[in-house]
Length: 135
Image (cartoon, rainbow, N blue to C red; front, side):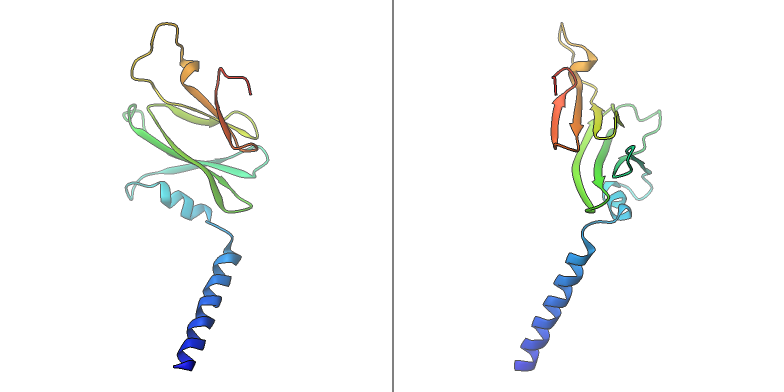
């Protein structure tokens, strides 16, 4: 019984150390997490300094109203810092630390424009603001 307890504790510490050394997810694991179907194509694009990857499902022209899942992956930590989806819109880097994403609205009210539905996420601050909102 004592030997079983010692073996169990040893295995727990061994696996705990192995997990902490890994530090997070690999880019391939991140890509796989975005796939809803096995044949979904995932494309990734790094920022200017190559510290983050923006990964998203690649939709073809016939999928204009489809759900586009995306995430931002920090390479140094192996962590996903943002995971969202947009419908019929787009996601792109606008500079080294900012990602712009747009969801096609159902109904646009009088006085609204496309810019009212565009959001900008800053990887440096972790904040999301509207494109028309000053940062």
